[in-house]
Image 1 (cartoon, rainbow, N blue to C red):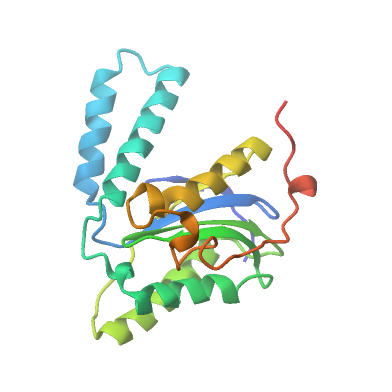
Image 2 (cartoon, one colour; image 1 turned 180 degrees about the vertical axis):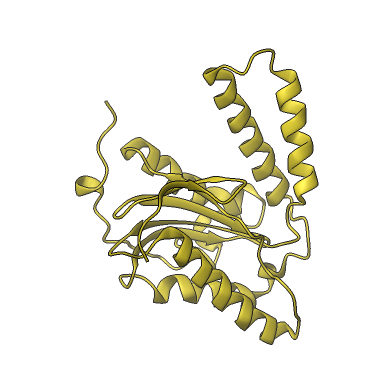
Length: 212
């Protein structure tokens, strides 16, 4: 499937380019009610006296901070806290390595996942996430004898711009389980790159430029 460049599915903008490095987050369907996000959006917009570019960036940063804190608090059923369910998702990430992406880093939290990949060949970001969600939903629903949607429809992705951005993304993903109080050290969290002692052979030199 061809890459779509910059596009939106009606809620979040997405950046989809061949060979791009992407930091991706997607969440369980019950982890973050849309009415909560919309109330934050309205509050932040009202508090902004003028929606300049700088204020807009501040709003997005504050919104992202609130979402991160909310999801790390463990809202919803937290199906991914079950080892067998988390293992299904983790295995899907690892199996796909080198087939349509290079897997750089990841962590599976109780109600959401973070991962960092480099897209390769013609696999689009949207089709890749659809594959992860579809396969994991099918397997986990069978495992838990449940029905209905497992994942929130949309997802969040950040195009990695430079080396500093890459290192910040890796640090965030690695430290997320410890920051949320799930473990003391990143390596103690089984369902993560740190917990699997994952060593990626990804070299940023040919795909990401140093900051100016």
